Length: 127
Image (tube, rainbow, N blue to C red; front, top):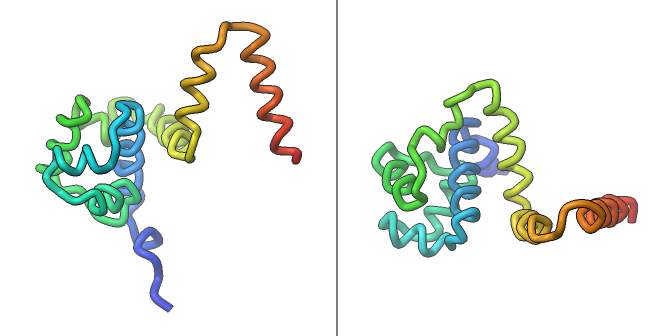
């Protein structure tokens, strides 16, 4: 049985893809919109985001410009000590619904409403 492309992907390619996905979602951009701006298909953006395909330097530059981010932000090596934490946050925010939940959380007043929501969500993992 052939291995999936994700199992062969380089960890750096996976991390770059995760950052592309995170920035795209933060900007509220669809894969289709990013693909059109970059001049590729949305399937190609999916492959970049999974790390299944490597992003060339020129393509990374186009994607970064579209996402209004410096290319260096795609590597997360400005502060290598924080890179692991950034990767962890990127992975968490890549979960379906996570960014929407965080946005809704940020709109709640500080204090009891936020604490109540956190406790509610924590209680769900026991279900």
